[in-house]
Image (cartoon, rainbow, N blue to C red; front, side):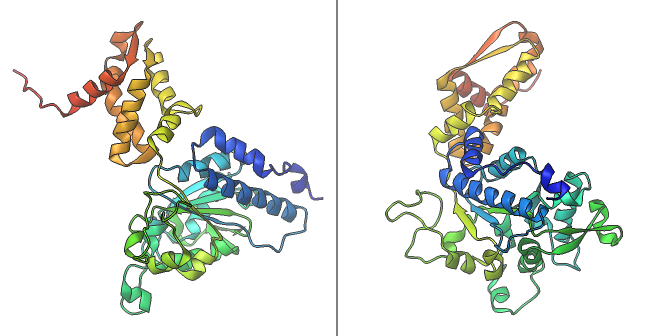
Length: 355
């Protein structure tokens, strides 16, 4: 057994990984189980390679499909933190086909190397989360048929990602801010890097079979409910080769109001705790009433921005309290439904000009 293999911890079981995800991520049971199994396989692959017996099985890269604010990024970030591996978030829209102005796909591995303190061995066990992959679909019918101009920000990026997803030794830049200079490169093998891709595919219904309802309004498995197939994704503009390197494809659902309430109250790093901590430093105690929490959830649900939207609602609700925090020292502020409604109404009320 090599020194590296001795340093690696024993793989966490899928059940143990799922328990950790359950503690931080509300709902999305199917996605969490799929991610737990893929992460377990990832750990076994990296340990086997460290022991000098690399596995021949292909890695289980993941594609998460779901609306904004449903927890796609949160699942990936929580997983990387629990496994204690380098983690980087890449936005697919920032990249272009090699040779054109914009980032080459190798830059995301350079960023992972940076997160690993420039240790290639550690980077090769990391996780790369690629968001907005639906935005790199083929852009036009001309691109689908091979006619027209080069699709450097869509199909070209998908083609460039194939080698990373499949696993290959590449030369990634050590200075990601000057990747175009073609100097100072480090070889990194992407064979055991776990890639988690994500996208909303919000207009997928325009490309699917019209006899089916596609979207995010129903539940997976419901009779007559929406189902997304690989054929739908191909029509949308994703390459068959690209999808083939993402064997674990999971549909995630929009969060219900009860889910959003749980997001506010259950996780240890809840956004409620952030505001409570900020005002506690001013000597102000917050008393969260359930009616206030439900009003915040209802506002976020109307905006259709998921869990991410609740932070925006809370910023609006708590803006006056944060402004007057030093003057409220020693008091307890009760946040109920009436308080939330009044705070939001004050933001939209016409302002009286100063005399």
